[in-house]
Image 1 (cartoon, rainbow, N blue to C red):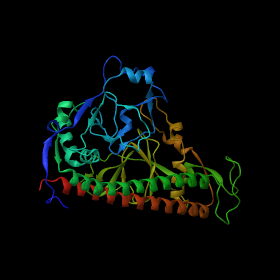
Image 2: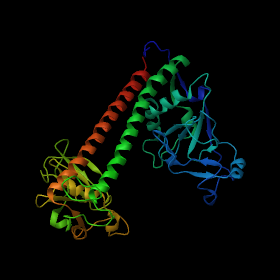
Image 3: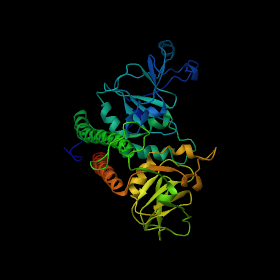
Image 4: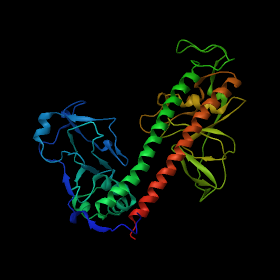
Length: 390
């Protein structure tokens, strides 16, 4: 089955049997002091609905009494939730994988309730996750100071609707890719947890490679042969600089506190470095091993001697950088302050062993992330083929 063999009907939501249901925004809407950490009815917030479905790590609830006082806005199995304010267009499907029976939407969402004889809920979720619908939403909300979708706007969204058999086929094909992506996500998450645990133990000497001495048995003890050394003795710490006069469409990557922000026609250095945020995002250092430019809201650190820079980077990743913040508003670091930071350092050979072990784990995570990106691209390409007018 392909796009040419599927018979498509194109309908606006208002011309289908989809119900667009607002939440109850009346006088019984819960007040801030009525929300609970545990309770009878899960009350959804904007953080709970993402572009990838539900996210339920942070939840609030309302009591059974409050739930029964509210009217519309309560989910039924196979309803979809669409965000309508702020991060508009996020979609999630309430199916039997969600471990709650009683769920309500907040005032920045609507419920999409389908008739499964016309549209399968899984198929509608795929449509709203695809570029076909998201482009329509973007056109509506583009340029708004406070992006929002009204019921009227939602009802004007055009949907490609084939027969149920074709919807089942499309859903099975797309979901097989989604399941693969979910499995890769779980593998990445497991590798990340393993890396964090191993990094903590290796960098504190709780685990040591054979031939380098005994591991410490008490957290806080310094392993035999390791020394406390100032960061300024290990690395030169330089300021980044403005890139306004060297901007280019290609060339050397320009780093800000959040990563690559553009390209320049020259580099500030061609040696490996650790980039540290000076203003704004101060707690996410990152390692670069190619020629680069970095802007004036950052520092970059480069080794003075033979110490392993990747080992030093791993040590810096373990720091609570917010303890070194010197501003009450926008977070800021001072070069003198970070120069005086002490790191517990083994001899170079042990640094190399530790850095190599953590590099191998990072490489495994990077490979998995690349595989995931390929599957995401395949899924997006398939959606384009399926939902393009043939």
